[in-house]
Image (cartoon, rainbow over all chains, first blue to last red; front, side, top):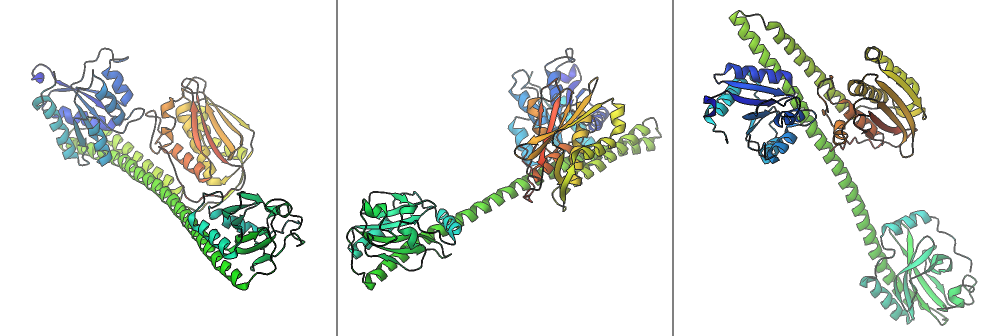
Length: 145
Length: 421
């Protein structure tokens, strides 16, 4: 299992700094060893994934966690670009959003999102979800390579 | 012959004829049967259903005549439609109304004419059913006239049916138009609810999250991060307040009663710029005002809202360079009246974002305190007055935000529609 050697690397695309902080805090408090990189919109995420300046030296993430509503390039647009890019298409993408809307879910799965999570408004559940997200992707899930 | 005078209800008559949607249509059997029967009844070589248009008579159906229309000045039927009674001319070559008529002097050499006006239910005599002979007659039996009148009634029924169908179609179209406006409105509301709920839920996640961390820390006797948490909670509550205000502001554009009036653009701009004087000085923004069109017809609140949002938008996103400069211009717009432009010398906007920024809650760049509602309001207001709002930009060379508004009193639609997708 890949996590035997190193922590699982998440790329979090989230424009709300507080939410990003809350996700990272919850993940830190979980028992899995993980690393988080945070970008604030779809364009920055793409630059990160393609190792364009200023991200030339970053490691490729194991999982992308993305919010749908972001400025410049939103989560849907980012997902569509990632899943048609042969270099990036295999990286699992988890949508993490406040939107329960059917249109959003359909569009996200339609563009081959690997999972769709709705941020719980309740803190305990939020905490639990993020912590399980960490466990799932670092312990149980077998990566493509 | 002297041309026939116009009926007193001429414009109404022409409109009804137009609404029958029959002029220049293909021949139809039901009309042709009527003329064929009329010709036979009258033992006449020619029978016509003639529709008297503005400057011609056009034959919906004709027996024994090659022409499809003649000039109205030469039309016997232009006389027939002036009365409720049939017009009978036994010998057109001696009748003072018709003896000089080219259709009498030359082909088809009309002598005998009997025409029945075709009068619709609204009183509009749109044409005639007539029978014509090239030989004069001495008498017309009453029986023949009343038979032709019965046929004419059939023609009227056919015309009336067309008119009703066309009116129903028009009503249906109007209904469809209203329906699609409601659908657009409904989509817009759905989107508003969607974005509003996202923007309202977001701070709740933040608030409950940090409040819980505060509780955990308080219970554990830690206090290093308490202030950070408290500040984030306060900011989130602030954001929520702002979002709620925005939603209310957007939804109010179309609801309240407004009183458009002639407004002096220069003083309105001065007033709005004055509100932001502090920011303008802090950001060292130079402002230039160049007005070619001085007056706008708009509700005072709407124009203030429009100018305020354009200027705030420019201060937020267009004044980030070294020597920021805003030019507020107005010029005459041929279609709507006045075009107001706010030009900046900032970084500009990529073409693919130019329309999206006018949608609710959309921002192109993060930060800068915008909530993504200002330009949506600008567009809603402009559309309310029959104008539009858009942006032009060349990345690296600044942006120009434009809005068109009327320069004088205009019919307002009353329905607010924002098409932003």
